[in-house]
Length: 232
Image 1 (cartoon, rainbow, N blue to C red):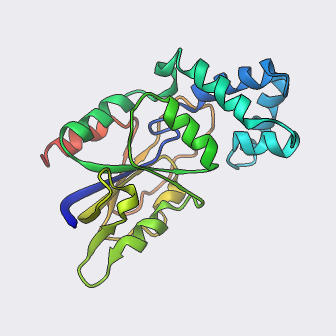
Image 2: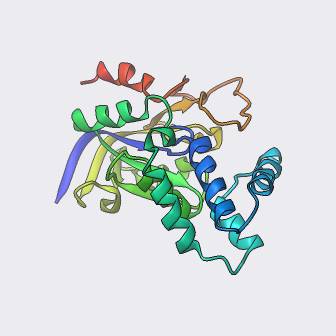
């Protein structure tokens, strides 16, 4: 069975939907309280990696420095504490945007780059509910989107694994939502995007002088609602 739709949204999590500072604040206290690493040392580890323009993969860094650590203990305590303050784990407008997609029957998936376990934990604890999820190994999301493009029809064949009802989708266009310019590199002309430039993260992002064609810059993800509502 194949479902044909107009638009499929591919939405990044960190700094678009997910509040990096909120999740890190909880994890920092968790690893400190479990006696794994001092909260200030853990904070410095993150700052050093991000100052070099690299992505801080929290659980990966913990296991690199402390190979005997029990990640199950970290996950259990993190999820418990995150459940007490889920409102701090989402960016401004994130819930409104997800609600808009669901209420208007827009098909979408969250495509997140990074460590599978840590990304899954953050998304699971964020309070946005069950959504189709793809954890990828490359920051260039456009590369994955390009693989879906059928050159003969100009349409996108969305894998059933990231469909909410596990059926293959054929979409006229794909809309990519991300906070990193690398994600839009070589975006197919049949696709378009939203570059999210504002977030609560302390990570310094240099704004681009020029956006790729068909990519619109916004500050927060809920601004997309206004732009897309005209297409309802």
